[in-house]
Every structure is written in C-alpha cells, then in structure tokens.
Length: 359
Image: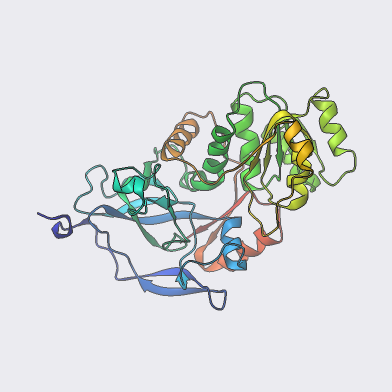
C-alpha cells in the first residue's frame, strides 16, 4: 500500500483549536480558531503541553528575520504528548511524552536526495518560520523530529530544551571546547544562561559571564560562572585579561548579536581564540582591523540550532540530574496571555530566562 493510503493511528482529535497567528503584512498577532492538523503518513500530531517564547520569535515579529509565510503560528520550543500517529510511523505511540525538535528536512536538497537525515539537510526548515509552530493546542511534526521525555522530567523543562538549551549545547561542539579552556559568554538571557551552565559541565575554566544587569550577573554566578562582568564598564577588557593571566579567552560566545558585543568579544580573544556568533540582531558585524585579526589567527564562526543527538543527550543529562533546569522556567502563562509573555521578554520584566505558554 502506498504511504499516502495508510490511515493514521489517532485519538479523537477535535475539529478546531486555538492558536496564536502572526500576520506578516500587518505584524499583528491574534489568537484565532483554526483547524486541528492531521498527520501525514510519516508525521505525528502532538498535544502541546508547553512552548517557550524566544528572542528569535520577536526577531520575526520585528522584521529582523524576514517572514517566509504570510500567516504562521509562532513557537519552536515545545513539548507535549502524542495525539495522532501517521500510518507509516512505527516508533511512536499515542500518549508518548516528547520534546519536539524545531526543524524538519527540506526533502529537496542534495543531501536529502541521497538519503540524508534531518541533521544532514542543507536547507533545514525551521518550525515557526517555515511551517506552523506550537503556540497552539496541537502541532504536527515529522515523526523523526521527536525525542522521548522520561516521566521524571517536567514537561516545562523539556520544552526549554528544544532551543534555549540545545542551541548553546550545539555551540559548545561547534567551538570544539576542551577541558580547562577559558570561556566568556556575552548576554545572560535564555541562551547565555544555559551556555554558562553547559560550559561548566564541559569543564571550561574559568567561565566568565557578561551582562549589563546586576541581577542577571548575580544569577549567572549561581548557574556556574566563575566571574561576572559588566560589558559596559571601561575596565572590562582589562579585567578579562587579568582573570586569564594575560592570555585572553580561548572561546568567546556572543549571545547578543550587537556590533559592540561582537567587537569586545573579539578584542579579548587569545591567540588562535575562537569567537562564536550565537545571538541574532539587525546590527552589522565589525571585527576591527584586518592586520590585528590575522596576526592573532582568530576564528569567527556563526552557529545556529542543534542536532537531534544533542537534544537526546540533553534529555539524558536532565533525567540523571546532571543538568539542573529548575531555574530556567521563569513563568508559565496561558495561551491567551501571549501578549503579556512577549512584553515580559521585551521589557526584561523580572529578567526571565524563559517564559512559557501553556495551551
């Protein structure tokens, strides 16, 4: 029987659901009633338990990330339980607890044409940008884009894994971080806070967190930073050199994406140091004079997203108690209070690590 002829395995799905919809032409967000998605043969439908509000969502709303579709459901950090399974899906069952990876293979690139998986895709489609996300009661996703969540892991923490934790986890691999290497992290929001935690677990030393907000710096100390600095202070570059015995940082992670933070991070790198660009903004990147940059053999690498095994490994770390995400969920709001959640993130109200929506 061809795949399209295999009926799905499903619970009794409702006909309609509530979902937040972003209208690109007016940049409006509205809570609307829309049809509940049905799974294709290789897809599953997940009843959403929680979904995070990320700065990249705001970047799409503000136009820093161009909208790919005229209308879309935001939300790419989600967990939930499987409500329907496509007929060709054999490894998931209705009721399974899962965290959803925020991407799917395009099916069109050279890698996909030769049988590559989601991690090999050269034009990965990102959930909430290329297809509907999870600020909704239900979301449809490929069956290969899921990782099982053990019963002992709270669903709110599982949702946070799907970007705010997995992206910095992947960035550490991109940087090739080794034990006892010095690390600086610019921006202690969702990505940066978890990067500090993960760098400490990975054995970095010292770990320096940089943020202009006093309370955020204090929180970074509780999450594993050895030192915290104000990037706006005039003596910050000198303090970094002092902390690293004059050598500079082996790896610097910019989680802000501003011209000033990128330049400062590059300026305090050690010889052959690596600068990882993780934050997103609309500002241009400037690295300073070419001669100085080349002479010190710095490497600058952009980083986006993560691999499926990263998400799986993080679930393992949380379930074993090796990674504590109890401080990561700053608030959980009902879906119809999405505007309030966005406001808290924009205005840094309470300096949230992650605000979640619960449909």
